Image 1: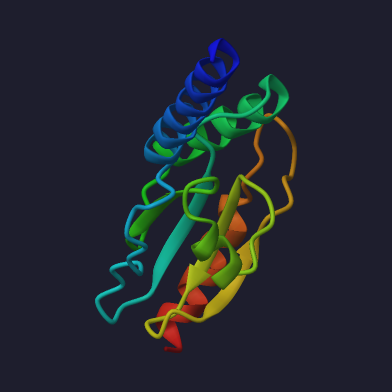
Image 2: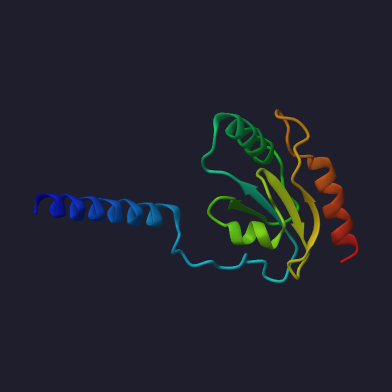
Length: 136
């Protein structure tokens, strides 16, 4: 009888733990498309958590974007929470910067860091944005 109670308590605690993790990680959250509103946009894939080496690069990319005035709407997407968008845009790591046209098609993508201190090539992003907006 004691053994049965212990198993029930173990299974209940396991179920509770998985349930809390599911809610915290957004496993059941609605997956809404990006609000492009018929115009091109930049999509920045970031991470909210990771190992220290990843987070150093993520913080550097965030700092670059904080100082940069985006000529297009900039959507920040958590790579871990929106794997559906990462798959849609063929992004396999963060940080990544993706330029999409008004139809949501990838025009340009940078998912390889330039350096750990400045992972995003914002000059190239500006050139790509300019080319897209001049020739829609």
